[in-house]
Amino acid sequence: MLDILFKNGTLVNEGKIFESDIGIKGERIEKIASSIEAEAKNIIDLNGYYVLPGLIDDQVHFREPGLTHKGNIQSESRAGLAGGVTSYFEMPNVNPTTTNRENLQAKFDLAATKSHANYSFYLGASNSNIDEIKAIDNTLACGLKVFMGASTGDMLVDDINVLEAIFRESPVNIVTHCEDTPTIIKNEKAIIEEFGTDIDASFHPKIRNAESCLKSSQLAYDLATKHGSNLHILHLTTADEMKLLTEGDITSKKITGEVCVHHLFFSEGAYESLGNQIKCNPSIKTEQDRLALIDAVQRDKIDIIATDHAPHTWEEKQEAYLKAPSGLPLNQHFLLVLLDFYAQGIFSLEQIVQKTSHNIAERFQIKDRGYLREGSFADLAVVDLSDQTLVTKEDILYYCKWSPFLDHTFSGAVKYTIINGKVVFQDGKFLKDLPLGKRIEFNR
Image (cartoon, rainbow, N blue to C red; front, side):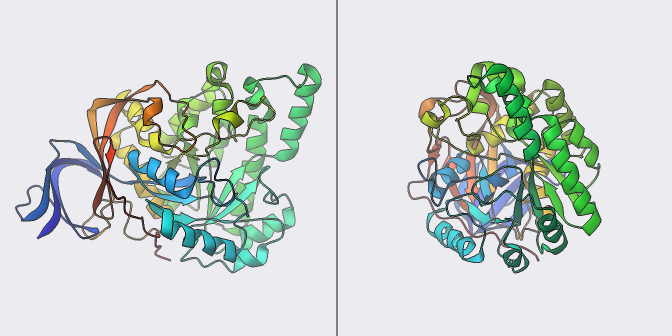
């Protein structure tokens, strides 16, 4: 007896698109076959809807603990489910920062009572916690986050000796935010001297410019090459940085790259209408840079697509440019952005699945997730490519209740989200009593 039998789906998995049924028993996929004739507690006819592995977002900021006026684990994991995101890795720049094992374990304990999606957390690096880094439990933390550019509290790592030690000693993947702080400070000073302090967000890519990104990314690349480190460079934004990456299958690489959906979707012309809403670090840059990022995804230079989901309150975003915080909420609309690219003939469905599920599972050695396979956890995103999704204020699920995509109509719609064998989202509505997600396990 199956718990759920999905009939007549169109599966997108491991480079193929094919018609198939999927049988789920308990938390896992029991059977995948062209026709499954079996008893089931719940039979759902998908009528040809496309079935993708649930998205794994390897870069989110859920703001808990300490910053919960912006968002929290419960609210933001729930928002992601509405967009087909079934698993996430969350960042350490909260309050207190996740820079020791005690604070890391506390976040896992918190998520076990609050997270509606599957979860893992990064340990954060600082100039003074190399002993904590060496002692990471590599079966617990998803990776080590190194801010090689300005960040919260003491999390800017700018001591070259410490960086050498981190790249030499880290027992887990190093993921980096790469911007050169001295370059940013110099740029900001020069612009303020010329234009004064009453400037708007259009100056953001001039302050946090391509030079600041490449200088820092080059340093990370050089350190990883020197020490043979596993390096994953987050949210790349410039054409220049693409020279650091190689084409090919992710399993053959020790240095990998990532792009976020907002850097694929927006370029600097959008500051005129959206202003601080799209102020983020690294900055959204030129149309030439945006097109270079798209090309790198298509050529398998960029291996992973994520969100860097980073909510702030609407009131905070209304501050003057120099005071407004950087970051924007994204995970509810993650898959929809990519379906827009599919509708335009830019990315294939196979590429979308590769960059949002398979490659994260491979890069971080995730156990039993990221693929549609018999025996794997049943994490699925089911989409209707013939439908559309209009973003309205009433449908925005982020705790901050705003989105830069307000009033945009996306091509496609998320019809079902299934996590650990349970349908949690269907036709725009959540299950009444949402279950909790599970801690992500790793094959390490």
